[in-house]
Length: 271
Image (tube, rainbow, N blue to C red; front, side, top):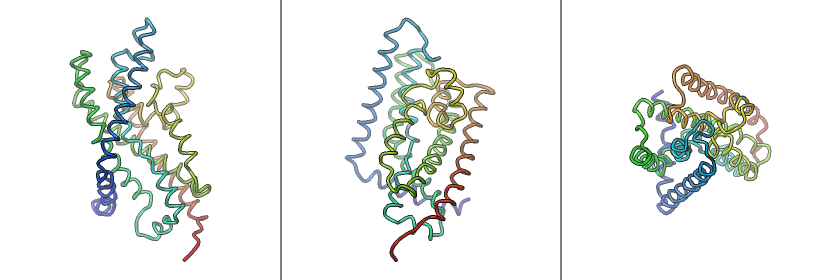
């Protein structure tokens, strides 16, 4: 295990250094993320202000405020590696990765981990601190417990693996099309809905919620945020965590099968 970390940890460190090298992009990323968060906040406040109901989709107005910002905090796990795969295929550098004594998928995962740390430091942790203070001082809600924070972070770790493993499988399409930009735009739009980042899954019809229970998407954003809000407890909490762990294993296995198939048809011109 330690030997494996020594091999792949430099991918994490190098990606983190690369992201921190551009200070302008660092600050712009913070401003854009904060702007997006407040857009969702005002939209949902308008929704709650237009009805006499105190609770919508199982969430009160105060809980929705926390949900909106924590959904953006949790989005630090949504690192797209399919773009990297597509770039490697187009440039032919994927062939060089195949002859190196490393696991290509593991190198992508550790590289994505560096990007995730960057996104967590800016701006996720800043928004997290801000919403926690606002929740206690302005909304009058109880502060989150240390135990719930640990469960939330554990869930986020598995969400990260689910997302990148799913995106790795999606990136394998590049071996057949070599061009993923259009598909990536469609994927990004759909993931905003399917993961619960834009609209909580509890707002969907019950029939759709049951379908989502058999898909990995709710385990990416919705599950960690609902754990943070304390909506899961006891057996239900254990179930959603086990479901996340199961999806990590399933997507890892599917990715391995697809990888074996696509590498058999890989053709690199030149010498």
